[in-house]
Image: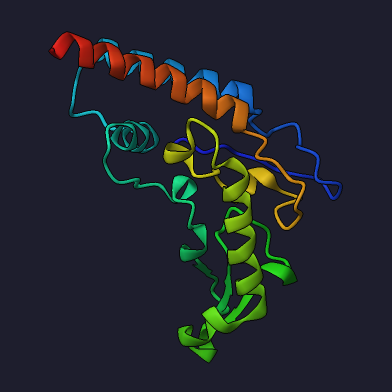
Length: 178
């Protein structure tokens, strides 16, 4: 798995060790191009496989492109339940404690707000040509404004670059197969 490693200061700005969106796109497209040259189906990279699979009409296998990341919770050693471990452990993203049972999670106000926020973020992207592939992307890429109506995925432009490259290769292969 190739992580979009991000660290942020208290103001929400990326820390120096963070991977910027453009570098991540260049890296993933470069890896994709190398995989094409190798032409070895035994080598699988989860993000690339998922994107290509989705573009070819298959199911999306990545939480970051599911559009339903609220289905992927993290339980910490103390039993606390939060949204994905890519997001900070803050009160507004706390969904309770496993000691209280999982049945309570969908009823927690924070969970309901988070789920609704993810749906709103997805609606903002629905007219994009790549929506069926990314479904708005990962909420960590909206941070620190994931709960804010005005937020936008900081990887949006870079994801479009990745999707465009992958799609052009798929289209070329489709033409050759005919």
